[in-house]
Length: 154
Image 1 (tube, one colour):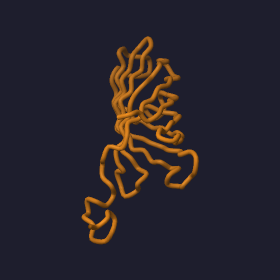
Image 2: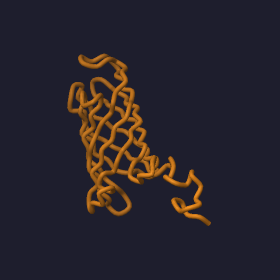
Image 3: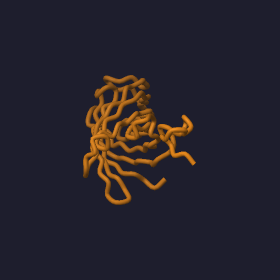
Image 4: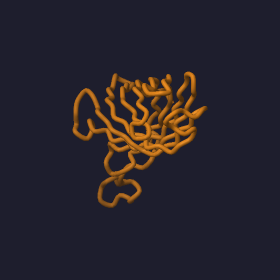
C-alpha cells in the first residue's frame, strides 16, 4: 500500500481530486438596488490543486423582494487562515464566473448578464458545524451582498 503523495503513488492520488466535501447554506441582504433578501447554497468540492486549502465552490443563489434574481456561479475559494495556520477563525477569499438573471430589467443591470463573482469572509468551526460571514461582490462589486451561513447536513 502506497499513501498519496509518497514516492510510487499514482499521479491521480496526488492533489486530492474533486470530491464532494460539504454543502453550505446562506442567507443575507443585497444592499444595492434592487434591495433583496437573498438565500442560497454552495457545494464545497476539492481540493482542486496540490494546495489542500483551495476548493471549487459552485453556487446557486436566489434574491427576492420586488424583483427576483438568480445567481449561478463557479467559484474558486482559498482558505487563507488554514494556509497561514491561524487558530480560531479562517479568513478566505474567492472568485469565479457566473450568470445573473433578474425577473425584470433594472437601471444598471441587464435582465441576464455574465458576471465575475468576488468575495471575502471569515469562517469559524463550532464543533461539528462551521459558520461564516462574508461580503460578496457580484459583477466585480457592482452589487454588494452581506451573507451569513453555515454548513448544512447533506
